[in-house]
Image 1 (tube, rainbow, N blue to C red):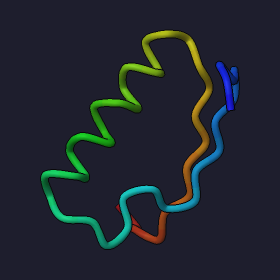
Image 2: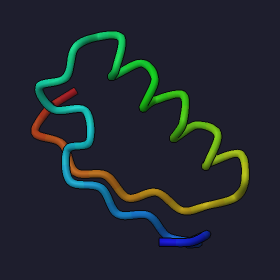
Image 3: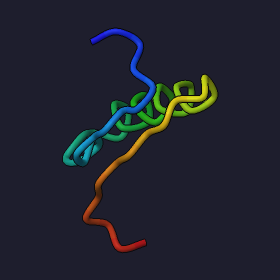
Amino acid sequence: MGNQDIIILDEPCNALVYKVNKEITKILLGLKEEGRTILMTSQRSE
């Protein structure tokens, strides 16, 4: 997929164990720091 400027994710952490969820969050924060735009959907109301 290459180095995309915009990343769209549909509930990327849904139904994952805590350890995997934390790792995905770490990766997404790294992408954010690189200046990428991340659009995520979630059913969480918080």
